Length: 213
Image (cartoon, rainbow, N blue to C red; front, side, top):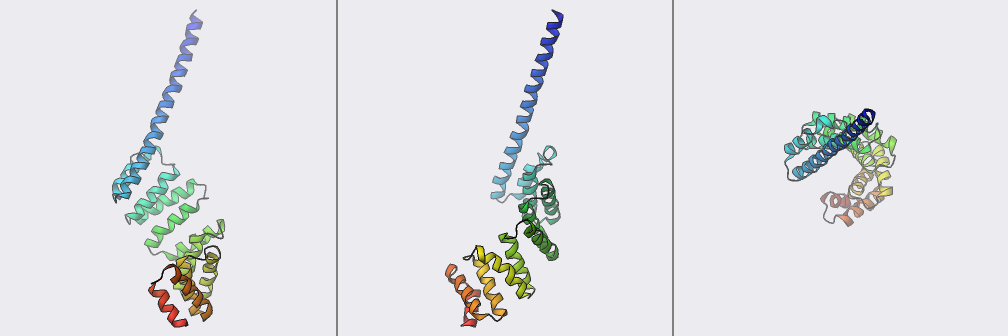
């Protein structure tokens, strides 16, 4: 009889422990979901610090959560607190087992805010190592080389974007000016016209078109 009592007691304790753990686990992920959504709503209203605080309140138990680190990176970027932003974006990238293109794209934002263009350039090249046709990396590299007056390099990256996004406004505009400086006026004219077809009164495209008529 005593053996049966002890066995029953042990079973009840185990069941109680499992139930308690499930309740605690449920409360933990419920609080994480609620905090994340509250943070989004606050950010949409421009309350960036409060949005950050919502996530920091649950961070100690969720420091290894990819989405929370990624979101904190973006919120600190919006506040122009670039060092903090960089730290959280890097943490998110590490948590993704160094596979997350979106974390790398996010990381370029605070680095660009600090005007660390060489580091930004390296990250875009790293992204192309994962995805050679990545829209943002190709476009931004094209713009970086254009601003450096390295027009042949700019052409290569901008053409990669154009091949997949022929109607893209920025790509056509930058290709127009790139071809202008490469003295390829027919190509420049084509892209300035494309730009004006999607943005009729674009001043830069109008100016460029006058120069290649």
